[in-house]
Each structure stands twice: as structure tokens, then as C-alpha cells.
Length: 255
Image (cartoon, rainbow, N blue to C red; front, top):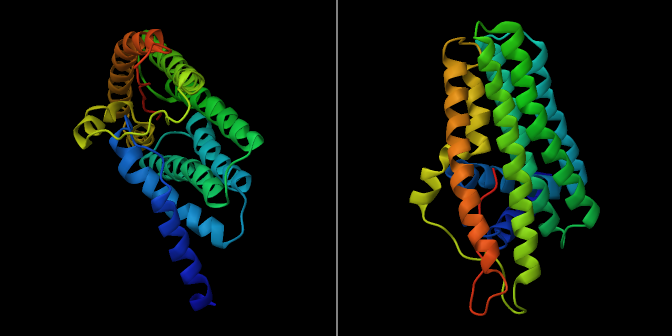
């Protein structure tokens, strides 16, 4: 059994390595850890004859299981570990479904639609769950409850704008040119780490520490808000340049 399966798994890993999407703008965790974890999970799913939508469904179980724990269970170090593990696995599986689709010859419109719908629900539900947890279990000022609401707004705007940027680039990319095909430096990937969804997942390791978690969460909110404010200016300039002769489309990261 092992000898029959291992070559398929190894070959699938090799094929995925050769078919990786560009990493321009991707923050470090997503670029160096989550994508690699997703590749391994995609290869395993391929050998198990799973479909991308089935992998998405498993991702939903882990992700929303973790989000549900945030909203309903009293914080503790053990709960924080469980939440972080669930969110990290959900994120890796989220990366795996797209890679599995490429491995199987390409994705489908309904698969891409499902993936984006799940992501849009996830980014909203996560911060609303934090709001509930802060209100029920943390001794924070009432004004602090505005932080998860603000984080929710920032995450929603960033998610929608990045998708819109990508669609506009694809629409205005001249024939024969592939949008966003170049890579970014590891230094840039490290600089945008605070905006990485994977880092937010790991922050929940501190969920059981009532003084640490709110500070870390607020710090990530501030970093994400600052990044979005700067990025919106740049993205507006990039979109304004679309369609001009000799202008290459730019790319941005997703977390």
C-alpha cells in the first residue's frame, strides 16, 4: 500500500512545485509556511481522490470550528491552543484547495466562487467572534470594543479591494502578458508580516492571557489599518494607470 501511494504523492508534490502561483507581495507566513503546508495537503488530497470543494469543506470545519470556540468558550491557554491549531489548519487547507484544482487540471467557476464566499464570511465572522469574546470574558474598556469592529471594517475593505484590483488588472492586461507574474523579495514579505492572516491565527495562542491578547490584537489592527491606508493610495494610482501604453499591471498580497 505504501509503495503504491508514495510515488503518486511525491509526483504530486513535484508537479505542484512547478505550478506554483507568483508570490509577489505575499507576506512571509503565507508565502513560506502556509503555501508549503497547503502544497503538502493538496498532494495528500490528490492521492486520496478528494475534490477541491471537498478540501474547502474540510477547511470550513476547522476554520469555523475555531471561530465558534472564540465566541462561545471561556478563554484559557488550552482554548487558545485549540483555536490557533484549528485556524492554522483551516488556512492551510484554504491554500490547498486551489493547488489541488491546478493539480487536477484547473479550477471551476463554482469552486472559485465557493472559495471567495467562504473567505468573505471568515474574515467577518472572526472579528465578530473576537468582539463577543472581549465583551463576555475580558476586562476591557467599553471603547476597546470598537477595535474588533474597526478590524472587521479594515479586513472587509482590504479583501474586496484586492479582488477588485485583480479583476481590473486581468481585464486591462494586454494579450500575451500575464498579470502579477513576478516575485517579491523576502525582505518585503517580512515587512508586511503584521498584515498576514496566518499571524492573526497564531495570535490566538495568547487568547488565555487576558492582558496579552487585547494588546496583540490591537497592535495587529493598527498595523493593518496603516497598511490599508497606504495601500489604497498606491492601488488607486495603479488602477489609474491601467490601460496606458507601456504600463505593467501591479500586484498585491492577499492574507
